[in-house]
Image 1 (cartoon, rainbow, N blue to C red):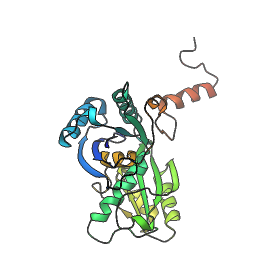
Image 2 (cartoon, rainbow, N blue to C red):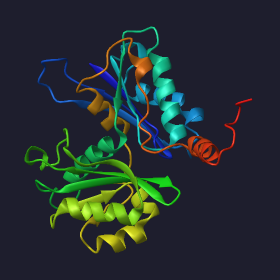
Image 3 (cartoon, one colour):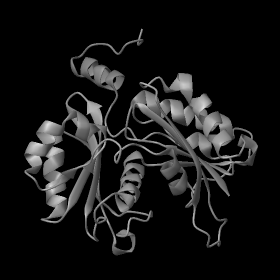
Length: 268
């Protein structure tokens, strides 16, 4: 089974191709290719080219893809919409399944796999992986995951979520990480950690390790590997929607107008 993974929730666009065992198979999922580019959030310009590049590197073509997995947020509103619209267009009129993958889950699993091959001991059972993305307006999108004993060696697999995805002030997210870690080891990663490193580090008070950008970067291959685990059915792609976590700028403006007693734009 060939799975294509699309990740555009940040400035980095990443597309991965993996080969996964069919249902009931026991072979491990194998990464065939991954192509990543800093698109500066202009993913609409570069995404189709990045998909072609990844498929070419993996020796595949779109007709041989069985599943398309797409990172659905939280993250850049525009990036999420571009990825989802592109994925829906690619599966239209085909039997290819479309699977939505929570962005922070994919970031956590990618980081755990990289930590398993990085110098030093891998995360132990019970360690906390805390991805966070820059949400602008002084906030981060973040969540916390616990490393189960079966994955403590750095292999990939489902991570239990212990702090649901939300939008937080950076210092508040750091306090939640500390609470989830309860004195154990925690790793904070993602462009939110890079953007707000000072306030997060101060609030953590040495209670967690802030990973560098390379260990915390998004991975289209990880999105594909998660998508290979199941979900989605041919023909149900239209109902898949991004996970925004908080209201968009347009929605906030509309609510502000309504709350002030003004008329909603376009109401006349």
